Length: 97
Image (cartoon, rainbow, N blue to C red; front, side, top):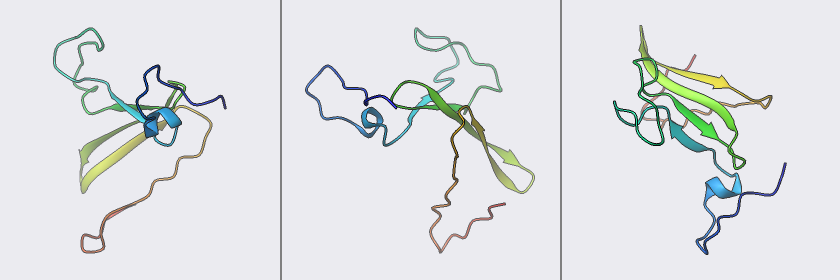
């Protein structure tokens, strides 16, 4: 792994800059195409790419309604393990399968 991205300004490094957190990039931010995004079709809405500090997409995620609640979809783009952790408070038990 190379050194973390360092911004050109004197601003403090963010967790995205240091690689501590993956940076989210929604596929569609509005119905119309913009300078930084393309026009989305119905399957693109809600999908988010998560990029590392080298601007490489690590995974894509989205949530959709399923027959018994909601389904979290993850697509791993790199040969690294991905662990899913349920942070639901005890008073709201989750149904994770």
